[in-house]
Amino acid sequence: MTTAETFLYLSPELTLLLVAALVFVLDLVWRRDPDRAHRWLPWVAMGGLAVALIITVALMARNPSAHIATMMVIDPMSLFFVAIAIVGAMLVILSALDYIPARTPYVSEFYALVVVAVLAIAIIVSANDLILIYLGMEFLSITSYILVGFLKRNRGSVEGALKYFLYGAAASAVMLYGMSFLYGATGATDLEAIARVFSGGLTGDLALMGFPAIALLMVGFGFKASLVPFHQWAPDAYEGAPTPVTAFLATASKAAGFAIIARVLLVGLPMFQEKEWVPILMGLSILTMTLGNLVAIQQRDMKRLLAYSSIAQAGYILIGLVAIGRDVAFGGLSGLLVYLFAYLFTNIGAFVVVIAVENATGATDLPAYAGLIRRSPLLASMLLLFLLSLAGIPPTGGFLGKFLVFGAAIRAHFLTLAIIAIINSVIAAFYYLNVVRYMFFVQPPDGGRKAIAVTPAIRVALWVCAAMTLLIGVCAQPFVTWAAHSASLLAAVW
Amino acid sequence: MIPLSWYLVVAAALFSIGVYGVLTRRNAVGVLMGVELMLNAVNLNLVAFWRYVTPTKMTGQVFAIIVITVAAAEAAVGLALVIAAYRTRRTVNVEELDTLKG
Image 1: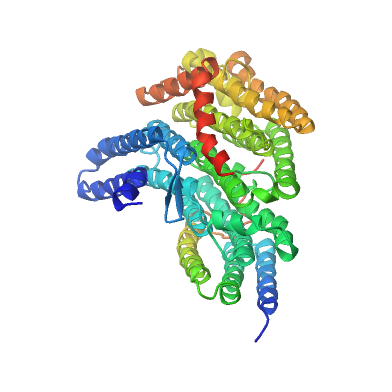
Image 2: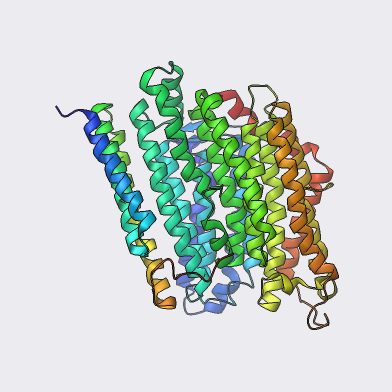
């Protein structure tokens, strides 16, 4: 590949890097005029992200399958996840416009760090080498620790960040231990070279490597995707973090975790599918959705409830990977992509409502939502839509995602898994509808006379999330085709 | 020459000590030290595998150097968080950091 082509394929990453640097530099230049910095820097970041999104979509149209020195692969699937991360970050910045300046004087750093986190995700999802995977994961983790602990005078924020950091550091060390064994067994760190060594026949020591290596790797990946039992950080970090950061962690960062699980297992370790990773992923999936849902029922804080709900959702999403059969349709992986795409808008939308209520009342517990329908019909009806989508009720995007993923499981003869997942969806509907009960039927303490004001930025973010949630559910075909197309090249490699 | 397995056993022992430290220490700095031990076990593994499996390619050594570098960056952010926690709470004991639960 020529240098020009390398630059072309790396242009989304380069753009993100330049935008982050630009925000940092402009913050210094406008140091004596903080009002101007606070007013313009979010829009600099938004504009830069929009440019990166346009480039990513343009690259998608070229349908590339480009290797950059065996380290990175730019293919439709990696671009799909880059697009998810960029859109997520744009919605997060929109929702943070009032939230962050009200709580800390360090505003510009926040926008720059969100862009840096997107860059980290862009590296992870196209990484094709254990070294770059580790670097990307650490890059995203370290950025996320700072973002979670961004309100450094707030007890919850710092505590959440410290717990996130301690779990994250330990999980990545365990993951590295697994990587060192993969390297030792194959003498390579490049995923395709690893696959070549293993496909030469699983004899003796090589066959023994599969299970421990995959189990150790899944600790690090599962931590990012917040799978049980590597989820303990999630409720605390989600509750303590500034709410826009929580929205980012629950969607874009989680999606990166799934992207890397899919790539490592499908490209690097396909021959360990039957005996090793399908059982591991199946166990993780059942544990994740069941525990996530059962604990979510008892939650009285909206952020914590959504944290456990997002853990449970990770369990459903994982079914898509379990269900990957050796069939042409490859329904599991494209179902997973559709699910993640719908989940991005649904979950960020729910968090935007939480942010709006928190801006107005300062509270995130369930009683703060009592009588929301009278105080703000817009917020209440939006949250109703997002909760219905999270519960998987048609005609929303959440329903389509669940339908495709559970359908793939049934087609691949994982009937038990599909049944457990459906039972879990029913349990989940209980606590989602409990929030609805608070919003519509519980009397607010002050009689509900105080209306909640919704700022234009939050309004735009809400409408975008709601429109996309409905659009994915109502006119599903283009999204399913797009996801199937994005998954197809990885399927071909496999 | 010392066989490869000896290095792997030492690394496994070091890793286990690190895990033990992470699980039992209540002081955040102590947990961080446990993590550093785990990372050093990984480095030992990587360098031993490099020497015995692919002595002509530098992959293992490069990987180890990258791990050391990233560990330093991670420790910098981690210790900053520990200091921030100490400033707001006057403790770095992870059991006393318990405002968030449920």
